[in-house]
Length: 491
Image (cartoon, rainbow, N blue to C red; front, side, top):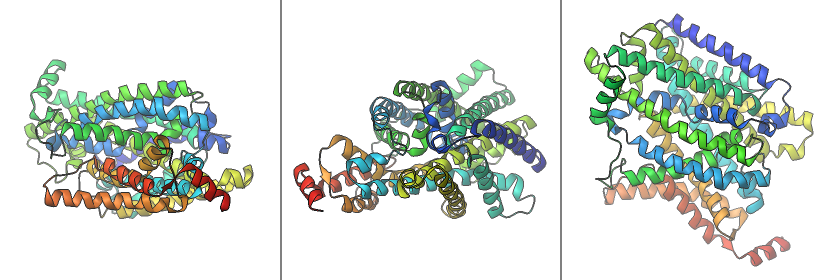
């Protein structure tokens, strides 16, 4: 696939994206930017969320992971489904009742302003690192396909990508993201299905042959119950999936701002349940595609790439398949990236403006708009810098690196919310950041000791230990309600 064909495909998608963003985001006020005015039909939110849950990391990394991890990721997806139900019936009613713009306003009401800002800071760190990794994975592919053949450095790649994301999100916010994410879902799922069809035909499989070959492959093993110390052990991945979903969706401003844009809690629940069911099917298709890609590489005599993340792009672009495969690959990749980066940038802007600057309470509508736009530009600049920095750390399968980052940065957020919801204790607000910082440090120490002394590898369930350490710290910092009230009155 030539660089000119890639450029044409990217520009065509971006043109459609900007048209959709302009029509959906025109005349948007600050409430529309932050919450979509809470008027989104539930079926549109569901269509948007199917794609929003996927990213360029999923598109690139999941198919390549089957050689090392088989279909073990489906064990985590089973946990995701349970986690979605917890979010739908546990967290959604609470957030609607509190009428929050940012989720972390709950921490202000429950603990105090210091806890509120601590939770927001951990979210901003988590989302910035996660979004930068997602965009970096795609920038690395675009560097090989377009920028390197044109003699352009990687930094120009990152700047152009983030600048385009900033342009199409700076006006409409959540109100336009619903529609652009829906477009992304259609492009992503369409690209996935078409690629499976093209690769299966190249291998000579009909529908029944595809199912037989994938089922017979050792790479299609789903359940792993034999080795509790393994990262792929069922109960570790299942429990981690529940916790990761609750933390990354239910307590994530990026994901929940779409859910909370629905008119009622009932509509939000419908959206979440439909998203959970569709997510199972889509991720299974990504894993099936991975098996087909490895079978194709073996039969075509192609050399395996040095990184599993490069497998999909190798086969789609340089694997001898029809040019249409390269086009749908680039379309799915670009659509997933721009959507994920756009929603992340909007959520970062919302959290910084509402949680750290207290914008809605301090400024009138006109001044708030100016502040919001400046924050949005600053978030774009920060994301560009972090993307360049992530390049030095991306030496692992991207999906694994992503969940490693999540395990450290979302732990304090999960611990704060769990403690607030299930405990009546009230910690000393000014010391809460210390407990939040102790969680990642102690969980990293535990991970090292477990591997060194007991030969036990802590995988994605590290997030659970992280949150437990934070909860323990909050208990140590707590005083009884009566004492807390006395302290508040004296101060």
